[in-house]
Image (cartoon, rainbow, N blue to C red; front, top):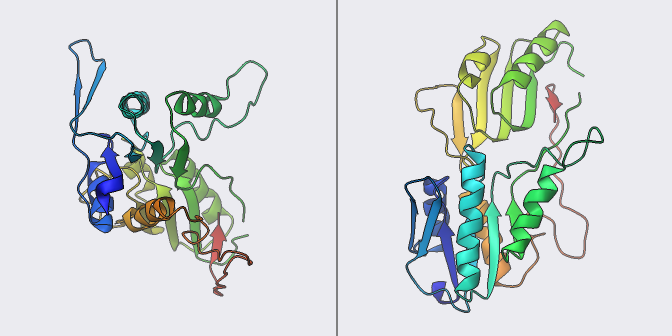
Length: 260
């Protein structure tokens, strides 16, 4: 199966890449990643990629700029080595929140990153859950807060206080796609009303002794997306949407308030 394609890993989340390769039944492509004495990124592909489909897996989590430059460098190395096509699998897409201008004198950094990805020869980008806004009604209910990112935990801590002050029951669950979980996140979310926190492994999660935190792997989802690319198929199947019809829907009825 791997003769015509290669999965190449950056250093941001090696465990996720190994899990994806296991789902696909292949080995991760051989690549040396290092730094020059002044901190510049050094990349060396250790196997031929000529005429192959390349899937470059690298979430751009903290340190965001380091991981972004590494992704660009690996993609450029693959392009110069005559890869047939390069797909960037970026489970956590840094700068996705900067997708519009709030005033006249600021950049749209998400667009800057997208332009750079295209410039180094990346033809497709696969991401998991780009940035989304928040809404919802909570009085007298347990709450499930659905978010895309937990970084410092400050926004969620504020949400928890607002929910409780609005009469929500002290039975709060948090589900987020990305869990960078920077230094203060655990302290801010260590609240008696928080029963459980669910994140995926789009970002390597360092917390090991946090009983309320549970990590769910997206490796099977990404592996299915790669398989669909190789079969020249639609990603609708990955999303649970049948071709030529309406999206499949599952309705769940309960008494919890869901904020997403």
